[in-house]
Structures are given as C-alpha cells and as structure tokens.
Amino acid sequence: MSVREYSLKDAIAHFLPILLMIIVPVIIWLVWNVKTGRYTNMDVSNRVQRKTLYIFIATCVIAYLIFYYIRNGSLDFVMLFILVLLFALQISNFFIKSSMHTAFNVFVASLFFVLDWKMGIIWFGIAALVGITRVILKRHTVKEVFMGAGIACVVSFIYLYCNIQFQH
Image 1: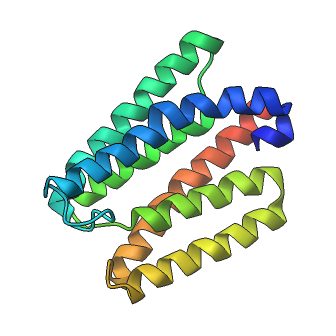
Image 2: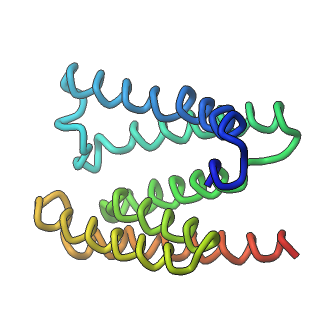
Image 3: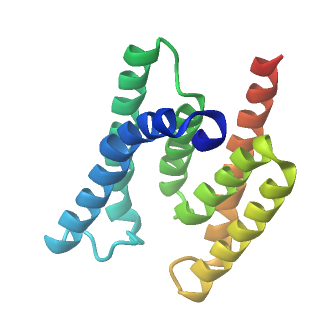
C-alpha cells in the first residue's frame, strides 16, 4: 500500500518505524521467550502464554502510534485498528483461544478491499486457507478459527465503515 501511495523513499520512511518498533521487537520477544522456555513454541498456542504476547505486541503498537502522532500530528488509522483487533483478541482469550493468524489475515483482506475489492476477496481466500491450516496443524479447533475470523470480521467492518466515513 505504501509503495502505491508514496514514492519508494517515502514508503521506506513509512515502513521503517513499523519494522523497528513493532516487527523486530516482536520477533526478538518470541525468540527470547521460546529460548528461555516461557513459550512452548513460536506459535504461542498456549492460552496462558498468549497473555504476555498480546500485552507486548499492544505495547509496541501503542509506542508506534505515539511516535507516529508526534511525527505526523495524526493517528495511523490502520495501526489503530490493529490495536483494536489485538484488544478484542485479548478479551476473547479469556474465554476461547481465538486464532490470531486467521484474525490478522481477515483484517488484511479488509485493508486490500479498500484498495481493490478483487484483491480483498483473494486475500479473504488466503485467510480461509490459513484458518484451515491452523486446524490441520492442530494449533486450533474449528471453533477457535471461526472465533478469530468472526472477531476480525467485526473489527474489519468497523474499519471499513470508518474508512468510508473519513474519506467523504
């Protein structure tokens, strides 16, 4: 999306803080917690172990949102909704271990849908395949995959609605 909207230089400038403030710290966090035995695996399939993962990712996203706001004087709308999705998944984790992989891919489908409805549908198909593989790999039950997808559908609908409202 950044490459489509910005020059290559601006796209890199937009992505670099996301890489350095969210992606790299989360990868380091996962590797460190697996190596120290706090997490069973990089998937973090255990509901109890997931609690600290959600908190860490949310902290990284909040730090990025603050950075982005200070730098640009506005909120990064997409990252704000990723934070909403994380909080919704965290709440659901108290009741059922919702599939985070499926949820994020459903949300990405909504991001693509804003750019091109055909790409959105294709990515929704990818999200369905991700959900199926989560069940095949025995990381989630069908119910957990549907719960993750359902939460992401609600958050995605709100995102799409707000995106339409703010564009007009």
